[in-house]
Amino acid sequence: KHIDPVGTIAIPLLLLISSSGFIFGWAKPVPINFNALRSGKSGMIWVALAGPGANLFMAVCWLLIMILAINMNIAVLIEMGRIGIMVNCVLAVFNLLPIPPLDGSRVISALLPNRLAYQYNQLEQYGLFILLGLMFIGGFNYLVLPVVGILLSWFQFALLLLG
Image (cartoon, rainbow, N blue to C red; front, side):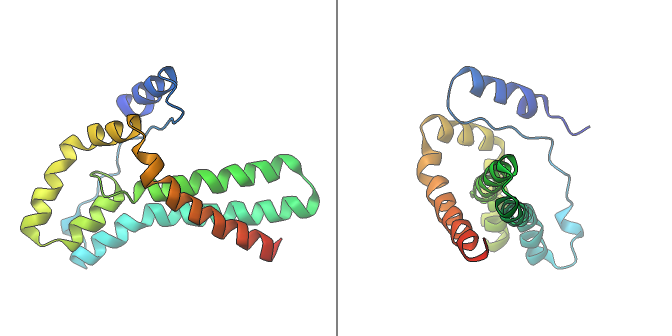
């Protein structure tokens, strides 16, 4: 029901075979009727920010697990916490890119006047190709990784304070 043959199987395999150093995939998007939202465009922004917000919440949960694991000296949980924080920070930042159909594009669309939002949303049919192109030319190194680095430094600071 949620498996997208392209995003769940084909793209991850292609990236694995191509030795791109970066593997990702996706499931079918959850259908959302933005017209049914009572708060209109601000509701669209909140819905779009829910995914990256959940990723940041999960990163905080992994931080707490990591702190407990450090205090109990459980190496495998410390490593799981480190990876959990990193993966969720990458996903949060990646999903905030303003490329349709990512969540960041929904925020931009909600902030634009209706006519411009309609034109901007037409990019969604090319979104996969834009993302793949960015990935293959190393664009994520310039767009995603610097922001992820900032987030990870905040988590490292929190670990120093709380650990």
